Length: 302
Image (cartoon, rainbow, N blue to C red; front, side, top):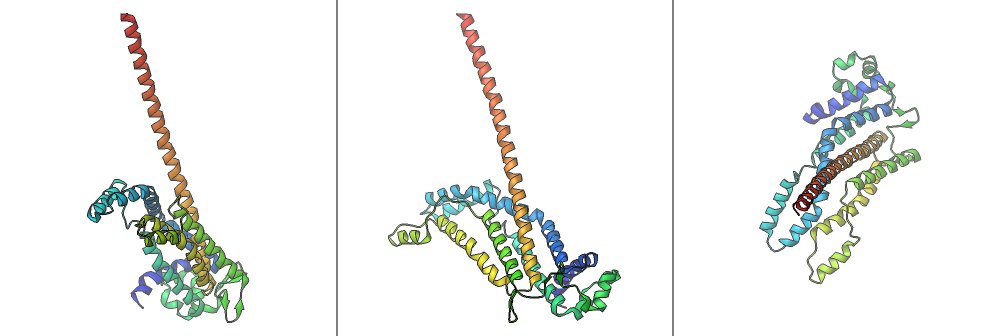
C-alpha cells in the first residue's frame, strides 16, 4: 500500500465506512462525510475568507502604489510589503484550504473507485477495529451487499454520460454543482466598478498606454469565475455520481460558510462603527459643554 493510500485514502475510507455503518445509504454517508470535512476545515476557511476580504479592501491602495512607483519596482515592492503588514495579510494566506482540499478530493476519487469497482479489496483498507461494527464487517465479507444508491433512487456508481447513454438526474446534479461553484466564486471575487473589457485595455496598450495590472487581473478573475464552473460541469458528468454528490455538497456547505462568515464580519464592522459613533458623540458633547462654560465665564467677566 502506498504512502498516499495508507495515510490519506485509508482514514477517509474508514470515516466514510463508520458513517455508512450507522446509516447504510452511500449517498447520505457521502453528504454527512462532506459536511464533517468542511466543519473541520472551518478555522482555515474563516482565515482564508478574512484574507480575501482584506485583499479586496487593499485594492485601491495597491493601485495607488503601483501608479506612484510605476518607474521604481524596488520601491513599489517595499511599499506593497508594508501595506500587507499594515493589513496583517499574507500573500499566500488564502491557499491553505486549497492545499488541504486537493488531496481530499483525490482520495475521495480513490475511495469511490474502491467502493465501485474494487470492493473485494475493502478488507485491506478497513481498520481491524472497524470490523467490530456489524455493517462494516458484513460489507467486508459480502461486498455485493453494498448499498450504492442515494435514497434508493440514484445509483452513485453510474456516470451522467457514458457509453450506455445519458442519465438526466445526474446531469442536473452536475449542473447544480457547477452553479454552486459559480456562486461561491462570486462571493470571493474582487469587487470592481470598472466595466471595461480586456480587449479595450490591450488596444490601449497597443497605442503605447501602460496597462493597469490590477485591472487586468480583475478582468481575468471575472472571466475565470464564469469559465471554471462550465469546465467543472463537463468534468463532473464523466465522473461517478458519488463524486458529483461530494462536490455538490462541498460547494453548498462552502457557500453557506462564506455567507455566515461575511455576515459576522459585517456585524462586527457595524458594531465598531457604532462604538466610534458613540465615542464621537460623547466627544462632541464634551466640546459643546466646554464651549458653553467658556462663553458663560466670558459673559460673567463682562
